[in-house]
Length: 474
Image (cartoon, rainbow, N blue to C red; front, side, top):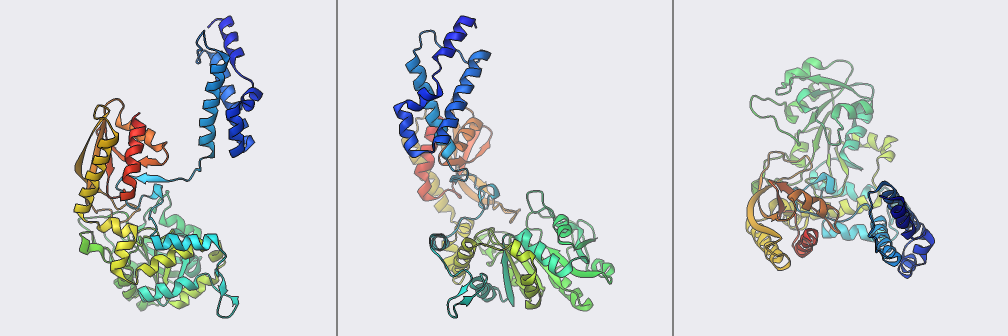
């Protein structure tokens, strides 16, 4: 590029003040902070200047300064729109993974959403006893429901299940030994592992047995004067099959009583309902595990329960009371929105049939195949109305969904999917474009086909999804 041409191109660049004086930009200033627009203009002009000097940006010889200003203003408007867009925003989940950790896991029921809106928009009696006018407990609204639904003596809720395990171990076994099967030393997500959580609690890990087999006698042999607890971790996010033997909670409780030791069961993604009647793998319910007699049971609120992120601790009052007095409880306590959402979710379980109808996670887990097929054909029909067949081919096929969230790893849920094959771009390019849309869309790519699983797409999202795909293919 000649110096004369480069100099001319640089002179075409408007100044920051020229851009800010443009009528379209002054309109933007009425709706957006000046600093956001100013930073966008500066960044764009700097980028263009560097591009011209490096030869990466080539200007037409006949371009006029007004045209170049138009380009800068349009680029500024797009940049400002992106910068003011919330980082946490809506995503249409077309992956078929119901409890998708990256997408926020469980969706809340209508009742739970309304409860959150009320306490978020108004003052509430979070820690006020309205009967006496004195300070109350933020857990009171949840304790009665949890004990009533599960039969536990007492209950406590913290901000997630890792915190629940941490608090329980810190309270009952700090600086003493906790015995756990080697096959149950799971990684619970985000690279956090049971041994690491245990170390943080101050408890000392004692592994027993082998990866595939642990017998009751292995626990008995490991018990000594330093033993504080026997821990059972339900491997909800993986399965070992074949030549296996796991010591049950009931067997651990028997050993615990024999040696006067408390037993804790970490259920992970605990469920209040037996969903095997819907063809899902058999998982022990919270009530069944409590019925086996452990002193402490922990599980998540935003997995199979279908509520907000929370760690639920149930068990004997003597241990729960000690946890409530542990200073760590304040560090991991739940806020008013979690209290509201979890209370509303638990109330749904007072009528099991209603819970299955109203809690989105349970709806998606138990939905009828005919409904899924009808939803897929509806999506295909809408795509036909907004897409030209010369741009992409699409069809309804059978597929398999996943539960996700570390729950029911062996479950294969038959589903109906809409498969789309773009003609002018790859499926991977379509997927990347859809991620940057508004709303963003997440689907699956297999064999250069973009797959939309109708199990996790709501009926009210079909039109929006089809329009997002049409826009991305343009």
